[in-house]
Image (cartoon, rainbow, N blue to C red; front, side):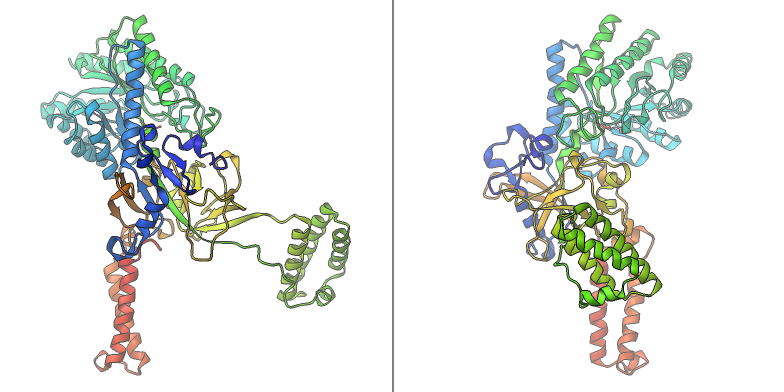
Length: 631
Ligand code: PLP
């Protein structure tokens, strides 16, 4: 586990058990030994053909642990409750989950259910997100906040105002000044008094990748002048009491509590100013940004790690708000956060399988003898060959590498000119491989082919260089003897993973046992953002998903839900194809073809045997459309 730094990024949810497999502690620190779940057992159960409709689920597979989600929510809540109590803060914490981080129905429903005892709410950033948040919160705590962010048109604003009529605690957060006019107009028309928040552009900036949303030039929010104009307008309309919430978002993965405290302090000043100007302020919403330590280093110098714990984050927020409000004699507000990454990242694991690896293969000199090879070489190439032989004899590493390169280059030139045959070119490659292994210059990094699409399942790796811990989920009691990069099954050269946490360019891996796969790898901490971002590049659909709850008993878990990945037909439909029509066309073709093969050219004459063939062909095609998930 030290090799993969599991203790660093995995605690308190993931560790290695005595069988050498990844073990999941669904209740975090409170997990009892008999409650630990062996991840490999879940993978075996999910892919077992005896289960799930007699096919088993195809990999890649997302394994969701709602217990982990519950633990994350409760840990965040208790971190704030502890800081509030410890510092004598006179208000409470009431978070919301930004559904954009993972809109999966069961994730959102679970969060609403688990967060209900402490009024945990939701944040929406678009109309469909608002609709899903509204319907989920109907089953939640009535006091839970429903924060409406994002660009808003008339329809979005109407919906948010109607939501108040449904007794949902909706706050419309103005991201642009123009939204105010629509809010005023629509609320008057519907005779519903809105609760309004505003998003302030802070001067505090976060310099990492995710910091571009912050600072004066950030894409979202109102600057100081706009904030003042909004206040004035509301005052003139007699609606200043509607303004109750101040929101800001410094950016995701805030690296340090110092930067956090700086931003929260600035926002608290704006909050106090709004109180002074007469708004009925109640809530300070500090946005997202609570970071995840993806590489387990607790370092604040990179986007993939952060140098604080949940407790330190909460303590910094509470003390920054309290400090400013006390100095300004303002009542302590309710503190809301929109932590997404920190709530959902740990709860799911993406499992995939290495189905083959490039092998060194014994270097050969092809069927051609050295003598024949040398005869075919140009004078310059022959001179390189002789220098290479001499350098090899005396073990001169540097010259060996130099002459090998030169020899190869000249041979390729000769091949292009047609003066060297393919067998000879292969022999040169074989010779160079032999020399490389003899002098230890061979690249030891191998390519493992894994059955997923990087574009679909790990889009942030491809898009923004985000790294996630990737680890075999078994054989961790065996020393890995190979180093590998992972190549996916899309026919795109970007579809590979060749950078790993710790700045490594390869991953320690085990030798595959046979060619039938069976070597399972897990990508961890990918529960936020990855699922909704993934596209259909190469028409690879999404993974299968299982929901796994800890249960006392022989297996220690129960699969409470299993959803196969989309079939080829499903994926084609997304791109406006019509699988049913496509199938009919191909079926007709199959009938024609089967008829032709038997010397018939019209359908009525097709004999029983050829009909069988056509039927078998059609059945095979139907299987490809409907039952063949993913590939
Ligand atoms: N709130 C807003 C307005 C955001 O833009 C984001 C993400 O970018 C979040 C919350 C969630 O941030 P995080 O996942 O870092 O907690």
